[in-house]
Image (cartoon, rainbow, N blue to C red; front, side):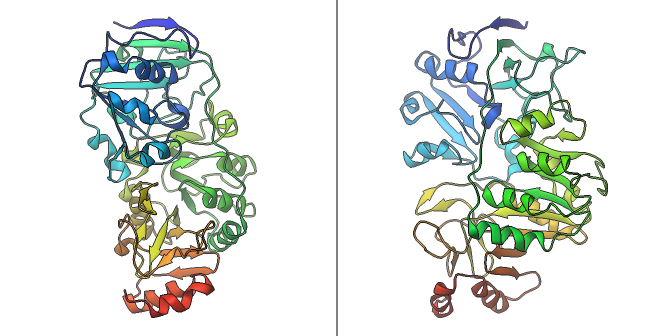
Length: 417
């Protein structure tokens, strides 16, 4: 039977012992979708509730810190955001799976914590900022706890939840966490111009996280009838939609609608998506399905990398021996773009590490192969575009060296691969 209480986010904290048992596996939404009224209560009560396994996504809070590992095992698909401190401490247990597999990887869930907007007039709840891997877990969880925040936007989605499915609601009123990207540098702007120059009107876009995707969106102001089918969207999509650049008019499915799994950005994208029938949140089994992606003509997948080797293998996970990224959905999006008529499977990265000047085009990867060379398409740096599609290993080597930093090309020529 559903119970409800009202509170501020910090005090008093709800007593979770009625719903959480020792040994439970707990999952909650990421970024602005974290239900902090519940997660902070969990951390405060961990000694009495634990041991527990908690799965977090891209985090914008300090809710889970290294000192909390005394009673909590911490899992994630990524070491992004504030998860970096957990990774540095060796306390982040990574799930190295493609993004669309996450619902199955989390099949051991016991408790699901949601961050929801107020109920719709029909009494049901939209799922706030995300559906992605969270929505498929709703029927699998033994217990569902929800923070209902009157400042959470109500974004249309493929799935929703009824009040009878929720075991306990905590009502709050608090601003959402936001992510503001730093201004792109000269290299990122050059990369964005390269990519914008090969995107045709009517293309359907997917953008990963980071400065480069946002810079690409900023460079598309003269394009027309672009569409969106992406894992995540941010402020740039709101800007281009209101400018009339993104219309979704030429999409072969979900026409007129920007499809995404979750929202990550500032209040700008939250307000834009609130009650907007031109935005639809969907589970990752839909947003990341290569067969669905391939139905779109001119599907353009734009994803980042830590480094790429001379054959097109991509490391998007480890730098300097430390886990900082994710397997994510890049390979799924690239596969969809490869199969799309006129599609562009793009990996974009600056040619060097800004802090050290080390080359990010390398003879051999220093970390795992996050995306195999069989999925390689177009690799873009500030020095140009290497189109590896249909190219032999020898041909790829030359093309990749041509887009490396000029100061590193001789060493790459001399290196054995």
